[in-house]
Length: 147
Image (cartoon, rainbow, N blue to C red; front, top):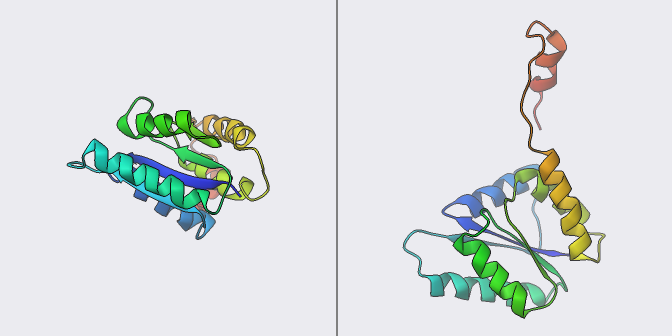
């Protein structure tokens, strides 16, 4: 199993984690690290190192999901990935990626291949609604259930 760290600015990480578990159920080997206003860089770095060390006791590979390329959570994760093996870092994380990741991470052994698949899933999850015929009843039926 691949371990997950979800991080980002403000309440992004806890929000993504909560939404992921609402849809996919409770997940093991997941750590959530919000970068909160008023938190020092050192405090955030300590949380990152602590979470990595905790997960490495239980898994061999870790994927760190971040919100924004170039932001503090991403830079902190990237710094750790440079000095430690078996850590992949993803920016621009969306819920589609996390949900698919909960299913795929159980049977994969390569975090790199796992991330490649999730990047494709993330891209496919970004779309624009185009209504061709508002009178089409089947369109309304498609949205009645939700996930």
